[in-house]
Amino acid sequence: MDSAAAALLGMGLAAAGFAGAGVGIGYIFGKMIEAVARQPEAEARVGKYMWIGFALVEAIALYGLVIAFIIMGLRK
Amino acid sequence: MAEDITPFKRKYESAMEESPLHPFELHNWIPISLGGLDISINKAVVIMWVVVSLVAVLMVMAGSARKLVPGKLQSMAEIMVDFIRGIIMDTMGKEGMRFFPLIATLFLFILFCNLIGLIPGSYTVTSQIVVTAVFACLVYGLSLVMGFLLHGVKFLGILVPPGTPAWLLPLMIPIELISQLARPISLAVRLFANMTAGHVILGVLFGLAISGGLLIGWLPFAFTIAMNGLEVGIAFIQAYIFTVLTCVYLGDAFHLHGHDEHAH
Image: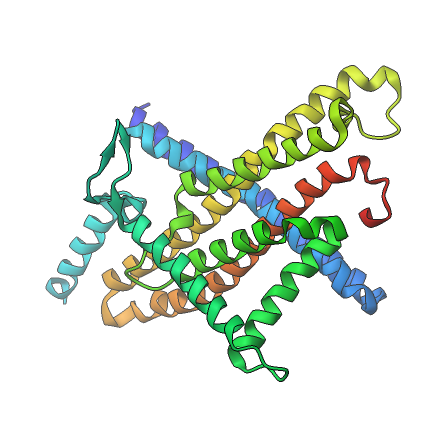
């Protein structure tokens, strides 16, 4: 295989990691809604942890992006 | 009709040819070298000066003419200070208020950098990993120094979660060591990658809007407007997350294993 084509494939594969982050973010928000529906007065406290968890999961997706950028830099 | 589309297509292809990271490149405006150290003035430096002076002027103006019934500016400053104090009290407790100046400065600087970057033609300073890495290393180094000053050698106990059986120690210590070392890296990469990714998405959508022409280009253009709104939210969330994690890391150094009443 052409090495340029392989680099493009690798960048695409790095982006596939977003699927996991999508599942994770959906899980976090779903659980948050569940928790608030059960105990509305806990919203402020649960919300703080939700945003932290959201950021942690989102960062993992962005590591994939960083890897894609690294491959892009190596391509030349 | 085909001739109408060709210039747009060419523009699109040339936009796709160049790297999506092209807008993040910095060019020296005034090259300065201090003993081999490159301290040139470029766009990021100027924007940082703008951010610092903006925050300083806003806060001094809000604080200089204090009234019992606050005006708009004073209310904004009070809400901001109250918000940051809430973060510190929740994660570190009362002793954490010693770090209020540091944490408020970090929060306001990152927030204003993120927000100023959204103005077209300006520059997002936090999309440079150098900036975020310096902040992350500063915060993590401070937490280590604080921990060793307060607890001495016992601070190494942070590598052993409470209640770990002895036979698990050879497994737990490397895992905890890695998770500790990943803290500054994840802190730096999170902010940098979020800002970079947001602006790359905006750039790609704008490229589509230009290449699409009037017929279909309004659709990606509408998306850019929606994405800009989302980016304002992300700017706030990322500044908040950076601040909260700073507080959590410093709080870990304060309350080893969270025995104190503040930890929960």
